[in-house]
Length: 488
Ligand code: GLU
Image (cartoon, rainbow, N blue to C red):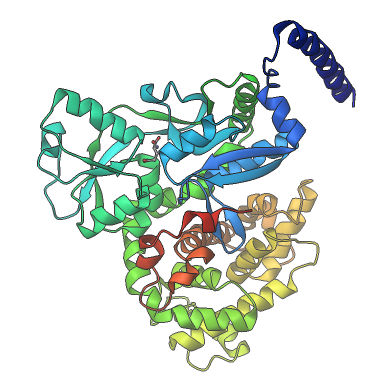
C-alpha cells in the first residue's frame, strides 16, 4: 500500500513536472515510466519465446518448457501474470522486443553475442552451453573448420550460430552455408539425422535435450568457447526490469530452484546417458508404435494418461513383452503373479493383457492413496506405490512426518524412502525393510520418459495424426502454424 502511494505520489509529481515541461517545450512526448513499473501496473509480464523443447511447448497438462517455467516463477515473484508470445523467427523475436510497447523480456534460450548488442541487453546467465558442430553417424566426422568446406550446412537465421559462421567466413571466404528462418533447431537436427543436410551448429543444451529423438546425430566438435544463455530486454530499455531479473536469477541459483528445473528438463540425458538416449530414440520409433494403441485404450479405460503408462512400460521392460526377471515378474509391465491374478491377467506375456493389467493396477494404487495428497505429487506417489507397494510408501510418509517434513509432498517423502533399507530406520516401521532407493529411481526415470513422450506427442501436434507407426517423425517434422500455439 505504502509503495503504491509513494508510486502514485511520485507519478503525480512527474505528471505535474511533465505538465509544466510540456507547456514550456510545446508538444514533447511524455517519458515512459520505467519498464518494471509498467509491468507491475499492467499486472502482466509479456515474454517472447520460441516454440521448442528447450524453451516452450504444450503438453497434455498445458504450457511447459524450461523457459516457460522459469519465466513463470519470475512473473510470480513480481506478483503479475505471465503472457507468452511466440516469435516466428529470431528476427521477429528481436523486433517484438524492440517495438514501442513491445514485450518486456525475451526468454528463448538466447546466447549473449557481440552482434546482438544493438538489439538487446542480457541478464545474468542461467545456463552455460557450448556451440557444437553436429553430423550424421556413418559420415566422415569433421574435426576442424576446413572440414566444413563443400558441405551442406544450415543454421537458424539470425542465430548465434549464424553469427559464428559469418565470422568464420570472413576469414575463410570459400565457406558456404545457408540460413533459414522457416526452421527451428529441432528441424535442423532432423535434417542431419535424415541426411538432408550434412552439418549444423547447435548449442549443447539443445542437443542434449533432443538427442533422444535423433539416433543418428553425433557431435563432431565444439565450435568455439562456452557461451552464456540469458534473458534479454530491449537495448534501449532502462535497467529496472533487468535488475529485477538479475536478482531473481541469482536467487533461484542459490536456493536450488534453477538446479531442479535443469534436472527436470535436461536431466534425462544424465539419467539415460548418451547411449541410453540413442537407444530410447530407436525404441520410440521401433517398439512403441506396436503397443501405442494398447496404451491408449487401457489408459482411457482406467482414466490415466497413456504417456505415463507407456513410460512405466519403458522403465519396466524397454517395451519388450517377453521379459522375465529372476524375481518372477514378467511381461511388458513386469507384473508379479499376484498382481496379474488380482487384475485378471491370464497371460502376463501377452502385451495387451500386460498393459491393461498394469494400467488397472496403477489406477488402483492411486485410488488407495490418502486424499490429502494432491496432484501432481499424487501421480509420483502412485508410481512409487506401484513400484514398492503402498505399505512401504506409508512407512516412508510416517518417517517424513516424524522428521517434520510434509508426508504429502513427493520431494519430502523421496528423501525418506532410502531409509527403508537402513536398519536404524526400518526397524521402527510397520512394514520393515524395503529397497527404498528403487522407487526413487523408478519415479525419476519415468518422469524423464514421460517428459520426452509428452513433447513427442504434444496436443497441438495431435492434428497431425500421431498414431501407430508415425508417432515420432511427423510430430517433429511438421511444425504447426505458430499462431495456433500462442495462448490467448
Ligand atoms: N541459442 C541460439 C541463439 O542464441 C538460439 C537457438 C539456436 O539457433 O540454436 O541464437
